[in-house]
Length: 114
Length: 116
Image (cartoon, rainbow over all chains, first blue to last red; front, side, top):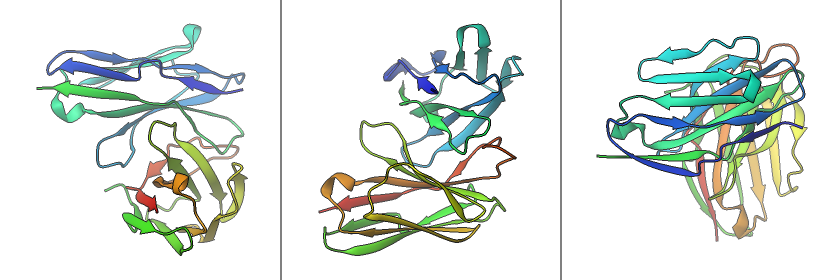
């Protein structure tokens, strides 16, 4: 069965600090896709990244970086030099080949304090 | 602007009312989804439509009735709702490859529903 666990329910950091959001997943498939989404207070989920299971290279996009570790079934997300606008709920998600669904974690609420 | 619009953005209805939520995507996608997001609960997938055919109904009560007349439009018809149905209803679309959602889903802004 597929499952996504985001153990951190809520995190608060002071602006300009680095912060890492954890994501651990479970799947029996060897081919699968992982995603991160951001949900700001406005409510709309914004797609951040997709990663397939064969690509373990870490990715950096500006202040955002993602660390995919297949050995530990983790796909962690780091924000460097955080800003107040990064305050949001962040969701990690998983989809398996042959399935129409994306399974979302419960989300981590991130507060960036000025 | 993600190319997925939802109307209305806010809706208040009584338990005996009938209303509909509308979703439209301008991205040329073939799959559309309804999700429910309640306070302090994970995002719940309700329905999936692939090329206008319903491929997933996640044990949703019959008081929620989806309709997908074409690949660009998705409706959620509501009738005889309960107060616990109050939530944010999110629509999403994607361009699935063969066998699954290889591509990311793009979400609309949601409809905040309150059932009195």
